[in-house]
Image 1: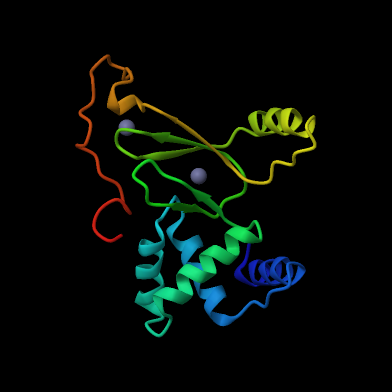
Image 2: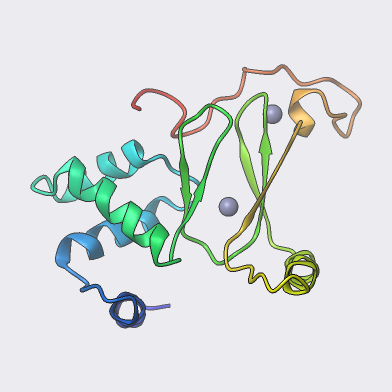
Amino acid sequence: MSLQTEFATLRRRLARAGYRLTPQRWTVWVALQELGGHPTAERLYQQVRASHPMVSRATVYKTLDLLVRVGLLTALPAVDGVTRFDAGPPHVNLECVHCGRIEDVQEPRVLAALSRLAGGRGFRVDRGVLVRGTCARCGGQTADGRRAGAGSESYEGRNGHG
Ligand SMILES: [Zn+2]
Ligand SMILES: [Zn+2]
């Protein structure tokens, strides 16, 4: 999607919920797209600040809250207690409780099955889902049968701020 299309879509989705697309909100959205994956609010703030030093931390945090509220962003309550944000379309997130890594699985059939299950109770699934367990590196069997060392791997967003 081009930035222009994206801008129009975001503006429409916000307007439908009764909000304006301010330059600050747009900046936060662009930072989300740039980072991808599952950044923390603090990591996003760093990303925004790099190009827009005048946007405050409070604005970034409030914008994230707003985007979650209107359904444009999924907040994942990660095991370390620090919320991760996911701007992608609904998908399955596999979170390792040992190393904190979150892996995306694009499997529309799983979400369709969950939608049917929830729909039977009048419940609409509009966010991604979070599944917890142990990843292949942290105790799951690797392809060659070796056990990977937990904690040897760090990923962006887990280090430093927050
Ligand atoms: Zn792991
Ligand atoms: Zn994800």
